[in-house]
View 1: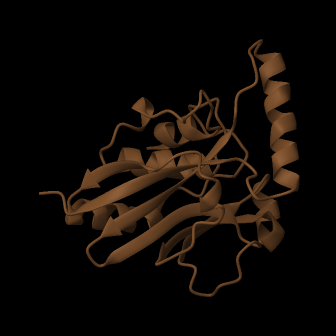
View 2: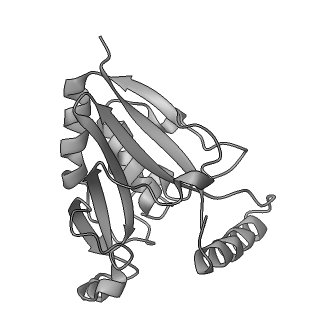
View 3: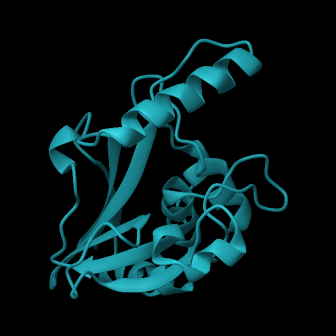
Amino acid sequence: MNDAAVQLWWLPVGAGGHVVVHTSRWWERFHALMEHRPEQPLFHSALIVVRTTGEWVIEMAPAWGQRNPSRGVVASGPVGLRFLGRFRLFRYEVRCWPQGVLPDRQYAVASPVVFPLTDAAAAGLLARAAAVPSHIWGRRINGSTDMWNSNSLTSWLLQEAGLDAAGISPPQGGTAPGWAAGIVAS
C-alpha cells in the first residue's frame, strides 16, 4: 500500500529572479548554436516528499540565498572551482527541509509529477539526501558530458530511490541541464 509519495516539481530556470533568467538564456542560446538545434526552455527541478508525518522540500540552492536557520541543510559543496568553496558566495546547499518552502513554486509550469512510495521508501529517500555526492556545481563529472547542479541532485535521488530518472523528461519540450550527471553519479 502506498502511503507516501515524492512530487517532482519543474520550475523555469530563473523564475522570479533577475540575473539567472538572463544568464541561463544566454547559456542556452550558446549551446543551441554549438549543437545546431533550436533553443529549448530550461528547467530547474525540486522534490517534495510527502509522508503521513508531514512534507519535506528537497532542493539544491546557493548557500547565500536563504538565511532561515531551520532550512534543513544536510550537505554542501563548492561552486565553479573547489578552492572557491571556502567562500559562502561559492557554495551550494542541499536542503531537506521539513515543512519547508519551495521558492518560486508559483511559477511551476504544471502540477508536479507524483511517484507513489511506501513510507519506508520515502524515509529512505529523505535519508539519502545527506549522502549526495558533493561534486562541483557547474562542472562536468567523470563519465558524463553534463554538469553537476540542482537537477543532478533530483535525478540522483530519484535513481537512488529505484525510480527510472532516465525515463523522465521536463515538460514543454524543455531541457534540464545536469539531469544526466545525476544519473551517472548514481
